[in-house]
Amino acid sequence: MPNKIITVIKREYTTRVKSKGFIVSLFLMPVLMCGLVVLSSFLAIMEHRTKEMRKLAVIDETGEIFTEMQAAIAGHSTFQRKGELLYQLHEEDATTEEARATLRERVNTKDLYAYLEIPKDVFTNGEVRFYARTATNFEIQSAFRRIISDIVRDKRFAESGYSQSEVSRLMRSVRFNAYAVKSSKGKDGGIEVETPLETGARLGLGYLLVFVLYMFVIIYANSIMRSVLEEKTTRIVEVIISSIKPHQLLLGKLIGVCSVCLTMFAIWVIFGVLLVMNIKPLLGIFGIDSLPLQLIGVIETIKASSAEVLTYFFVYFVIGFFMYSTLYAVVGAICSSEEEAQQTGVPLTMLIVVPFILMFQLFRIPDSTLSVLLSHVPFFSPILMFMRINVLMPPLWEILLNILLMCVTVLLVTLVSGKIYRVGILMYGKRPTLRQLWQWARY
Image (tube, rainbow, N blue to C red; front, side, top):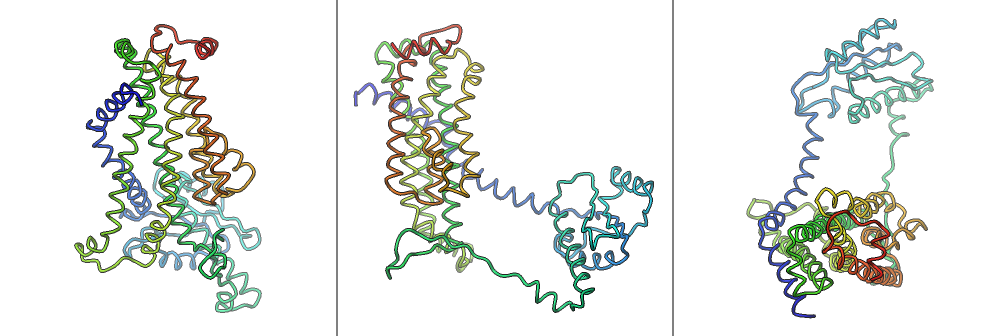
C-alpha cells in the first residue's frame, strides 16, 4: 500500500480516536443501550407507581358480572401496587343514551378514568365496550378482557351443568416449547436440537449485532460525508490532492474510519469477554453467590456461538461499511452545503433503513423465497443476510456466493464513485445532474 494512503489512514484514524466524541461514544453507546432497556421497563411499571385512585364505572345490564368482576380485580396484580388497589369500580344504572352521554362527559373531564358497558346479550354476543380518554392502555384493556371472559365462560359452563373445578380441569392449558432442529449432528450421531433458551440467547446476540452494524454505518458513513464536504467547502482538498491522488485520499478515508469503528467494537468485545470470564468474582463483591440457571444458560449459549457470529459480523460490517460509505463520500463531493448533502443522502439512508425494517418481518420466515432473494440484493445483504445467518444458517456455498456478490458490488461502486469523487471535489456551484454524474463516471 502506498505510503500516502497509509498517511491518510493514520490521520483519519488518530484524529477520530483521540477526539472527545470517540471517548464519549465508547462509553455512552453501551450505557444508552442499557438505559433504553431500563427505561422501557420503567415505563412499563409507571402505571403501577401512581398513588392516584382511578374510578371506573360499570354498566352491567346482566346483573351477574359486576360483583364477580370486583372480586377478581381485587386480587389482580394489574390493578394494584404493593397490595393497594389503584382502581375503584362502582356500578352505574345508565340505561338511557342521556345517561351514557353524562358518563362520557365525566370521562372527558377526568372525573372518571373510564367506563364499561356490559350488555344483556354478552353471554351470546360476547361484546363489551370500554370507553376512556385514550384507547392505548392495552394492559388494562387486556386485563379487563381476560377477567370478563373468564366470568362469562364460567357462567356458560355452569348453565351447561359443569362445576367450577371441572371447568378449571377441562380448560387447563398445555406447556408449549419450540425447539430448533440443527443441521449438525451430536456426539451420539443423532441430529441435535436447540432449546428455546438457546434460541432466544442466540437471536438476542444477533439482533444486538445487527443494531450495532446499522448504527455504526449510519453514524460513520455520514461522518465521512461531512468530512469530505468540509474539506471541499474550505478548499483544503485542493492542497491535499496536490500531493495525493483523489482515489488514494478516498481509500485512506474509508480504511481509517472503518478502523475506528472496529477499534470501538473490539474494545466492547474484549470488555464483554473479561466480564464473562470474571463474572463470579464480580458477583461476590455484591454478595451474590451465583446467577440464575437460565442466565447461566444464556451466557453459555453466547459463548458457544460468539466466535462464529462475530466472524460473520466482521465480514459483513467491513463490506457493508465500504459499500455505503463510498456512496456517502460521493454525496459529500458533489454537494456544496450541509443542507444539500442531507437532501441528496436521503436515498442512500433508505438503502440502510429499508432492510433494517424488513428484518423484523423476514426473520420469521428466513428460508422463504422472498427472504432469500432480498438477502442477496447487495445493498440489503449486510443486514438481511446477517439476520438469516443468526436465525437459520444458510448453506456455506450460499454465504460465500453472497459475500462474492457484495465484494463485486463494492469494487464496481468504488470504481464508479472514485471517478465521480475525483471530479466532484473540485467542482463548485450548482449540484450536478444525473447526466453529468454519468459523464464524470465515464472519464
